[in-house]
Length: 70
Image (tube, rainbow, N blue to C red; front, side):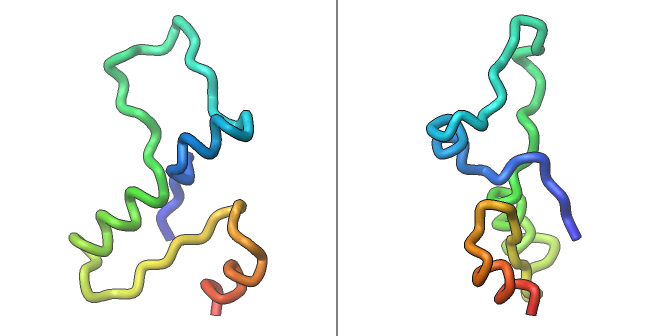
């Protein structure tokens, strides 16, 4: 399992009010939190190429989550 702090659709998160607001104390040079959609693509092309890599997150429809788990 690979766990990421973000799903990856920042525009959707902002639209729904879920995006974290940046405060003045945050370092502008700091790397943004990893997103599962980005990491999954990287793993599929790189280290885990040839293996099945699936994404599972809380905004997926329950039927989609069930399909991934099977």
